[in-house]
Length: 344
Image (cartoon, rainbow, N blue to C red; front, side, top):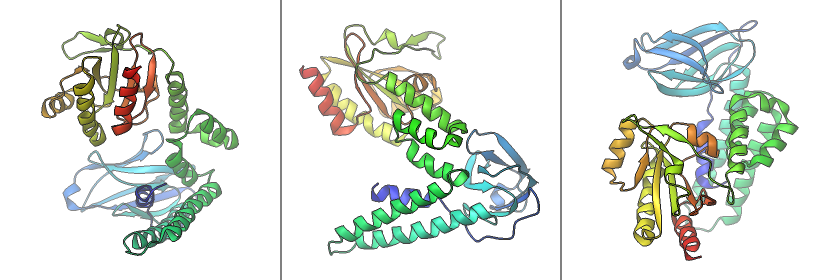
């Protein structure tokens, strides 16, 4: 894990002081917002499956919820379509302010984790800015940080804290690692997101190097249809870029693809497949960034489910007969891999 991952993981886990829990299974959630949100509907969403658990209208800059919860749930506050914080919905008088939560036992544990991890991060950053070489001390801090999250995750593996911390690692796991984790803790396999990750890992394993392409067909805005097989398996090398207009790394990678096309345009074709995006936004990005290659628009989740794509950009090079030569490379690695394959 690098410095960036330390800072990111520490920032996304935040909570404040604990208060006395409410009786039985009752909860109250008091979210401090701003008067700009007055009149907007605020929702508590199940983080795992996006189900709406509760709703209220923001009044005087505050959203107040009251209800009953059978067991603790990892939740997210949504106001006006914007994510306003992640917390654990459980019995207690929970407070949300500036994306920080407190007022119940599990949120208090999250607070303890946050304070401990932030202390490590602060010391790591202090050493990183020093003119003296602190390589050994920084490596020790990195180990402390990893050990902290491993310990807290293990201690809470059967509650939403452990689930949330598991997700931070699960997106980087391969199929065998995911299966092993679920075998060791079967309750993880009950979560919707973990089930999707497992299915994605299975799809990714089935569409790795050496496998033939899996076809899909998407209806286009002009009521025609486009299929991957219209481009792949037709006798050309085809570099397929699964991307979205809102994805910064996707946009940056288009420059790399342009360079590849400039170097090897006589030997391969490029195809863009717009996923998880709205067609007008995709078209605007194509024009803004001057993307000259063919596009399949409005593919949504269809290809990402088939190819086990959990993050974009995902770039795959197909051989002239439609065999997958490699996938999931970017930047200089991508350029070198393309050059090596075409050189064969």
